Length: 148
Image (cartoon, rainbow, N blue to C red; front, side, top):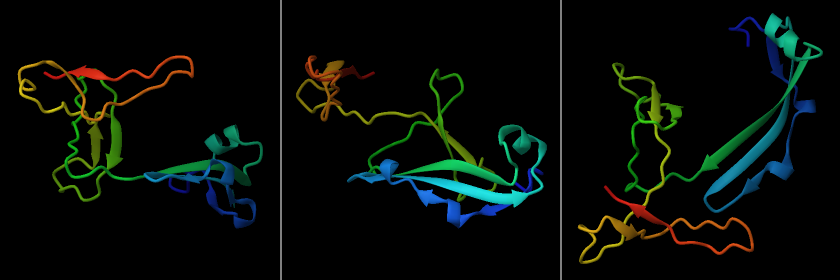
């Protein structure tokens, strides 16, 4: 915040804590949420416009720690004309002549079942179909997809 001229702030540990109701652990991901209060001085114009008192700022921080996919997963690089949105991350191990920011298209890994006609049939069943349940009165449908 000092670099953007919004003041000099440090975490106030006496007013910061993990929010246990929104922090959970699952087999393939962990969700952590905390309420963190920063206290400081010399609040800048922007900070003064969004907080009633510039001497302290409280924010909610949420982190998702997600298991990485296995080595068979291939990402799809984002292109602005693709019609998709992108997910971005900073790759600090990038070569000096490459962009630090990497952009990919979010996607599901679907593979078609192997069979004697699987290479010629365009519509096929997925190996591990993604199942959805909309409500308890509607049945679960198996996902079919087109392979081009």
